[in-house]
Picture 1 (cartoon, rainbow over the protein chains, first blue to last red):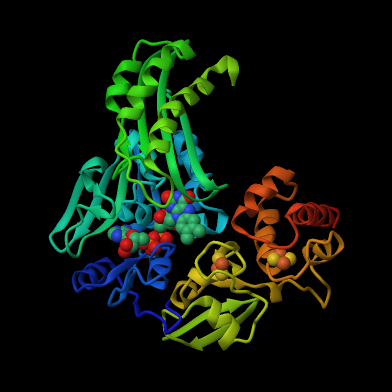
Picture 2: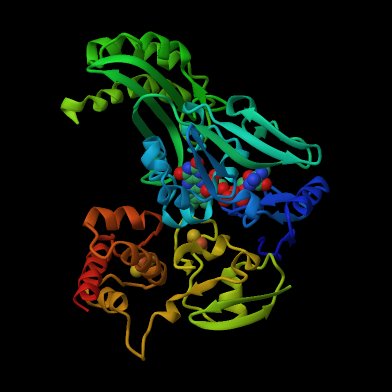
Length: 284
Length: 155
Ligand SMILES: Cc1cc2nc3c(=O)[nH]c(=O)nc-3n(C[C@H](O)[C@H](O)[C@H](O)COP(=O)(O)OP(=O)(O)OC[C@H]3O[C@@H](n4cnc5c(N)ncnc54)[C@H](O)[C@@H]3O)c2cc1C
Ligand code: FES
Ligand code: FES
């Protein structure tokens, strides 16, 4: 995709051949929204790309009683059009704010996760729902919890030759309210400066249980488990949430980069917690 | 590599490197220069085309990714020599100044109106958030899309 000439791309005939090609040093190519940008900018220079975006084994969404299996090469737009957002509204909230329509048509959930960006938007629902990553490689299949799969910025537990085949997304019990707020530079387009996603189980205004995931405030997406615990039994009112803002801010380990200084992120993160007040039915 | 796809309703077969950008394939190999290159990095939407009816950025699409698919570019919108209602509305509502961004906006809007024939102004803005225009200030573009929607609904 460089101006100097097209990068070499191989289209494997099946999953086995794809694995063999990746084992030989080929870089997986799904939607290309990251790969082509980075090659063009000169950040990456893979010997060749292996086009896995249309492999049947990586496509499709299968719904079961207790969860959904989502193929790695399913695009963001396909997810939005599927029944998944109905079952799990957190996906609708997140995916509607991911890029713009063309990026959503091209980009895949597998590519987003394999990037392991601390600002990767699909990681928020995957962390909240405690999804598993199903991989396939020269030594067969593996399945890892998302939090063990993502190791650091751009780092995953994938071994040489392994690719992500699918995600197992368990449906949580009950009917949690879903919340997502992303602070970014330009509306709808591009990478979060910081983000908070939440699932909150309410009984009236009392919080029965809560899960919180923060994006772009640490080397990986993180769950704020300490704050989750403290939320239990509190009411969803300002007086009850305010004392926890500092605690949420303290869970962050921001890295100052081009997208905003870390003092800003730490302070702003704490205040994000108050956004949960919007989940109150009476104020909706 | 030989790839074949449908381009604006006609079947084409070309011999290209699989990594050739769809943008270059269209503009340089096939002479369809309506599709524009702005940033080349996914940020401006000037290169938007439809693949199987859905918007895609041709600057971030490799030839191999459209093999066997249907591609629609701005050149494919005219019917029987007449401007498409979107093209007409962009001209009438002054949604075009220098015109560089226009094919991308029209292709993106085309995809929107197919799915949602009667969008609200906010829905139009949200949908076009991936397209940049340095001239018009967007208001006229939104108006043009709403006007086109009306033309298309009225037949
Ligand atoms: C203009 C623009 C806006 C964007 N906005 C957002 C945004 O708002 N939020 C956001 O999170 N991201 C955003 N992105 C980033 C990108 O679109 C997403 O990360 C997307 O989901 C990547 O998917 P892809 O299929 O295009 O990945 P690709 O570019 O094809 O691949 C990305 C990486 O993943 C690897 N890979 C892909 N599939 C697999 C697999 N199955 N197994 C193993 N490795 C694999 C590739 O080798 C590569 O390293 C944006 C990008 C652009 C250009
Ligand atoms: S040229 Fe493709 S998005 Fe700008
Ligand atoms: S009319 Fe000039 S960039 Fe939009």
